[in-house]
Image 1 (cartoon, rainbow, N blue to C red):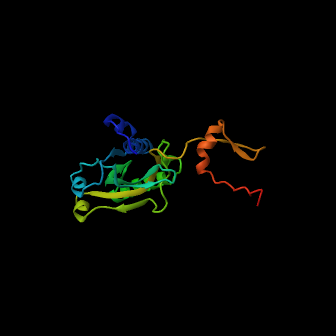
Image 2: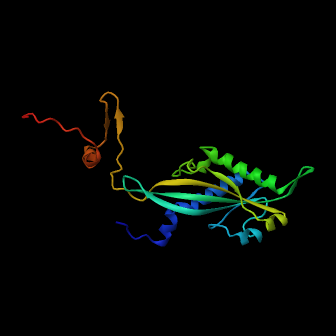
Image 3: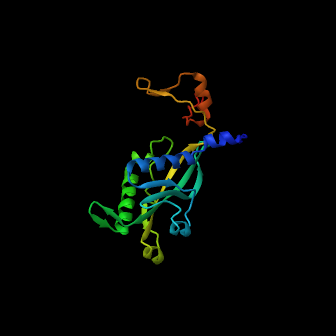
Length: 210
């Protein structure tokens, strides 16, 4: 049964927008000199051509799909398919010219490096799992001959992350402590055991009269 949720509370408890903001913040910090901005979803090619997504060299962070699933204890999780849109132009670095393709590959490779780090890819937040390895994070080109002629190259980096344990489960949330001497889990209140009893596998005792 789901209770009514006022709009202010809806915004406060949303797990997705804060996670997107945390990813953008982390990528900004880890890639000085590269513009990183959020994007509301899937990019249209016309947006890229008109350069309304992000200035080069830059990353526009959006998403293509969010799916849901159910945990065994009644809570649910979200499967988020993130998309980082990379916009690259030729750039003079030091005394040499670096072509747009090299700029795009460098930024894309950097994102893959970050996503491969189990700690960094949590984006400084709890309540999110490391990127899925099936499918793995992927760097792909996304540009046309017309775009190339304009001196701009576009790439995407895609990856999937799970936001687990959302909502309210139907199992009691009690936590016990393992006692080595007793060889059992001890709970501070006996009532907790009674509430957990329906969910704890038990061995049936033999009938003495049998």
